[in-house]
Length: 580
Image (cartoon, rainbow, N blue to C red; front, side, top):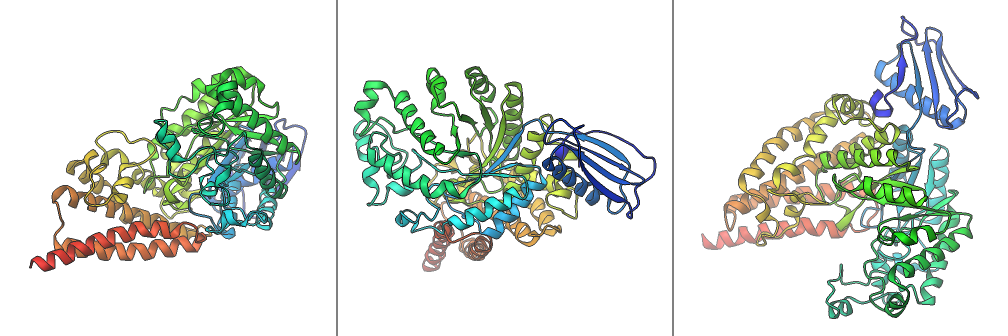
């Protein structure tokens, strides 16, 4: 339990256990200096929690709950002195690439964050907010409303979590700019980029044109509806990956003043908008770090967000650069679950630990763990709970290790599983990516791409072989049985357990597909019929579980992946029957 929250300064205070009739006292005191710190004493007369703020007492209560879960009704005597390494410890959930969770799901997640002592929460929004002045931009989604945002804001505040508004404000606007009504706001079309010898990221326009006054008017209207729903003192304006800036309608201005300064002017505009609602801005740091001389010219209320999602991301180098600029910054690793089936455990843990070490060494003010939904958000929320728990641990105490004690703590307190090995099984399942690929796949697992790849294509199949796939199967099969056979006691235990079991089953399907593709140009009729039936069952399970915890947005896109496999195997079955 202790490594989940902090490597406590803790010692026995009483030789005898605390009886279940003992009293619990919570007291505010000036003796505890850090506003989030607490002292928890448990003795034969009861429990006494002290802190200088209600937030500190709230965290003491979370630790007490863990102790009660671990020791049942009889607690050991002890004293705990505890405080966080990072004052800001956040979690960002992408709700724009696919899954838009229900309010019940979001509130359950917020409860998890509170129990893990996370104190900042963001929902990454591109076009899934119900803008009343721009209903066209969310017409194909199940958006979150202003009333729901205000309800979540209050729910977070009651748990000492700051609900930070997050809105794409320059790049990542493709879901809006692809619509005829808004296409005129775009910087450049894909065909024009190709005419310049530039390969576009996608066929839809990507960024707003920063030199068009209509773009400013449009963003002003979005902020006007969006920001008043949040009590937080800051807004994340994003503005990352603006790879097409200065390559279209703003090219002449970029040639005159430089792309960096063109970008800086837009950030200043976003900051001015945010100030109207008494908010400072957060900003992804990937663009401005390429223009280091301009960092000092950012608005004084800017917090930079240094993000990177691989185990070897240069957090230390970039953190030193931001620290030298004098600007406050966060380190922002990721859960490594997107573009995967069971996660990428080892990469996630190393990525998160390196971010924490670099952040602490360079005086970062915050730590934000991100959970993205690239290519439709295939992975359910349950897959991200294990890396989220480690992020919470390492942002509270930087030296936390992902060892046996940690995994047992997560099993007990996050999953509330019958077996203390549950989280270790999930971690092992999340490491099969290391066995499947013959080389390194960045920002994804190979089995994820194998699952998506049509039978007759070999881009990803060529990056593995039969022995690698068999190694992964040998590891995953017993883990699938163990995880499916365990029992969880969370409020959403059924959904979490089913989501985990489903994703392991899909991983097994992906591996069996790969084995068959490596073995023969076409599968046998028996195998084809068997896989077709398994995919039909998996499709309905996936659909059912998605709708239990999320709205409709992008569900049909994900179901088409199942339909692709079902159709392929049906074709093989028909072909084999005709040959006979």
